[in-house]
Length: 130
Length: 382
Image (cartoon, rainbow over all chains, first blue to last red; front, side):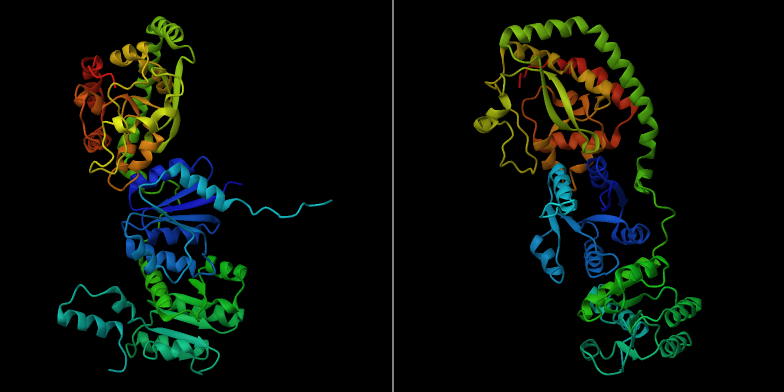
């Protein structure tokens, strides 16, 4: 079954290119801001990963990340896309463990490869015997 | 002042006229009803005694909500539940709470230590709780969550979960003309392939005789919305020319230190170009195989230049990314605007690409197609 990814990005063209690059392998849902993003998460509990851009709605994005990562219901791997000051962002998110950050500009194809790796099923370290 | 509540807080803000109040100050004014097993002080309560109204039963919590609705107390910003889960009591409480006017918007958060993930998800899907978290976390994290949940609850609902969502609307008009553009691309590219077929054969033979190796050169390019595809060209350089790029960086027309984030490569009098390749580039005949890309739907006749991946990845910034909203094209605004000029800054090129992405129309495409033959026989062989 194809896995689902939610991309939350206030920059519409950015959301479109992420959808194009990721759609070959994943179902991609788009949200224009973190508030609509959370509403979508509530409706789509089977999401495997969230991509969130912190540039346009920084405070909401930070609140969203803090909310999701501290939630028993909604906790999912999150990849943060940003072009803002990384140290400042990390200090604001110091209370939680971030999964990954991509600094703009970045290669979307590498992002896809990274997601593949993150969502790869954990292989068993011992062979299964009949 | 016993405690800060929303109303007092708002009044204070108006009187002083301070409209640039810090968010954290607003967050610190959040007030919670905290349903817990006993009234013994805990760490959270000690930290924020003014903001936490501890109660030991759901009934007490409902009484406080009633007092709030009658105006004797401020309406709580959230209800935190830290008691073992008893379905009947909990459901009865939630049903009563939701039935009260203005109370359905109050976030309800349960302590994670009392619920399994499955039960938590089930209650969330039934909209009986808003979240489940460790309530022993620090106050600021809880306050941030409540503040964000309130914002979400006041947000108008999304009509339905559409994969493309509302973002598509802005480009709807473009989509309508896409069918026309695509039909035109198919007809014209087919026509041109048929007409130029003898030329294609002659060029292929010339390349074979001049430098051996393969006739076509393919490279991965990022097109419309960063769709990665194989671009076809007649080979104009020696075999394995891509492997020599690093050794030619000093000849790059686009200075890497230029005030631009983009990375382009354009070398004047590139030593890797073959004799036949030089002619093909001068006449732009090397681009002819791209008609097959147009036929396949990778490209359009008119659009932005499909970029090699190393260039495209340098343009994934907030400012430059709109250039990917236009289709990749054989010819485009950049080519007809300044094709004869050797020097065009990377920023100028990107701005032309963005301009085309925003202004593209059938008539602009027509104008570009008409101007293309003039720009075709360029002086530059790079």
